[in-house]
Amino acid sequence: MRMTSNLGVDLVLNSLAGDCLTATWECMASFGRFVGIGKRDIHAHSRLNMFYFAKNVSFTAVDVFGMTKVRLALVWESLMATLDLVAAGHAQASYTVQKSPVSEIEGALRLMQSGKSVGKLVIEMEKEANVLTVFNSVPSYTLNPKATYVIAGGFGGIARRTARWMVERGARHLLLFSRSGPK
Image 1 (cartoon, helix red, strand yellow):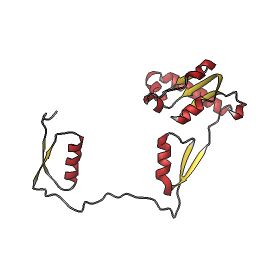
Image 2: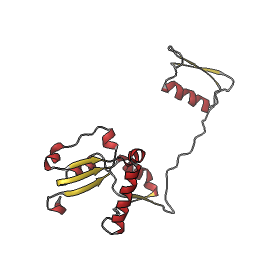
Image 3: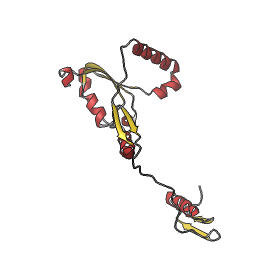
Image 4: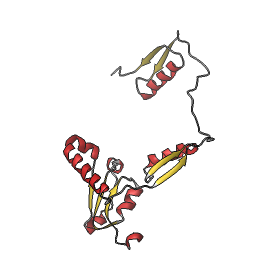
């Protein structure tokens, strides 16, 4: 808002979610257009401050992937118009880059997953970096493959996971019991 002398932004193409979407929405100018291309807040049934609609601001959600199934010709027409604007120098990509060393890849990926990252996320490979690695562990014990094991409690998630865990450790004969029977 400071950059626009508190007038706000006329057009936003937004893929941010959560607090970042809200902060962007609060920067809209009167008669502005907000085009949301992210789906996280839509699927989460998030709320939007209605005050900005009093300023004649339009909010449009666009699902480009969904459009390709229903209005493919419109998607191509829009893409060509966008490429023409870029070629003429009237539009350009944002080049905000957040760099993260490979040794901190988990934190970088969690930031991206949170929806609070902006721009590009670049993982820098370092020759001497220490990177956490998880190997498939070999169990320190095994179950007798000739024995029969009984799992009481049905076919639900815990019983299925327990059965898989036992098979990974050598069990080959399992009996799963359920009061309601198999479905």
